[in-house]
Amino acid sequence: MSRVWLITGGNSGFGRAITEAAVAAGDVVVATARRVTALDDLVAAHPDQVEALPLDVTDAAAVDATVRDITDRHDRIDVLVNNAGRSHVGAVEETTDAELRSLFEVQVFGPAALIRAVLPGMRSRRSGAIVQLSSMGGQMSFAGFSAYSATKFALEGMSEALADEVRPLGIKVLIVEPGAFRTALFSNISASAQIADYTATVGPTRHMIETGNGTQPGDPAKAAAAVLTALDTGATPLRLPLGDDAVDAVLGHLDSVRAEVTTWEELARNTRLTQ
Image (cartoon, rainbow, N blue to C red):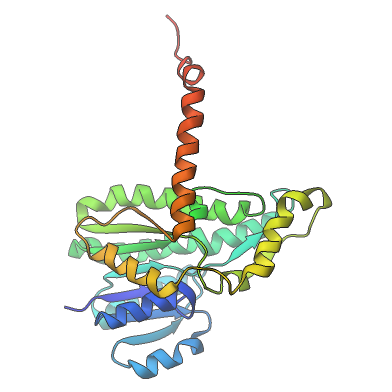
């Protein structure tokens, strides 16, 4: 039986690539976006497999209504892909509460609402998969990406707990951690007002964003194929870094954390109450 996918942010980047991969596998995809016209060609080419629906993931009522509609018409949602998102650049001090809250609405509260909406159906069937589009910035961060990484760290923490909760119910959770891929992420980015003292630290990040769009080495189609492969295996990983840069960065970060903990291990352990 073909699967029914719900993919947010399906109009471009990873969302569109995963949509195309799922269609090629013979599945049915409901792709959502704030502007669905970018999906017109896919809908026209695969009218029996692709449907485009408008959805703002920060609108909780719309999320619930969309999931009910899809479930009523397709009987189920087998795979949820929380992909909708954007980026932000700014030092911690530069980033306002409004900027930070706005990013969390899209990349944490939106996915949480979608997860709550699809889980009752998945639990009743004792099957399903939830794919969380994170980033290698979900395990580490650097100057200028504090707000973006904060949302991805939060998403990963939520997803790790979620995986423990739903694994006994036959539901998979896959956190995808891409590096630099040829998507429109750098074209959909907000920026905080600049403070001169952070030019040396945040400046290189701003420059990378301004000049790096269109030169990223990663192929979204290959990333989508990797996601489907990981989901279809009997041993789906919790985390899947994608791209040489992501794999190297994650492994290097883990080595660094281990080395630092080991260096300070004696002091860290010497904190027990004494009788």
